[in-house]
Length: 69
Image 1 (cartoon, rainbow, N blue to C red):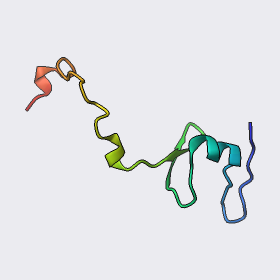
Image 2: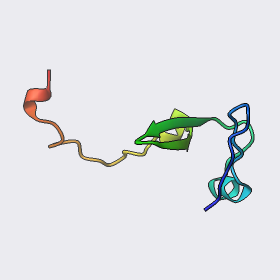
Image 3: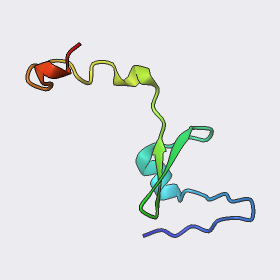
């Protein structure tokens, strides 16, 4: 497992093998999350890339009738 060091400016370098595996590019935005003592870096996606992700899903039965206004 690759190891990185935090610089005096609190910067880290993502190892080349991981950048290539994930297709990360210079200037790309990452979302930083911290949960249970673990730091996650998640590539930010443009909302347009999610278009059609739920196509064909049947929403019936997902909510109780009492939830509807």
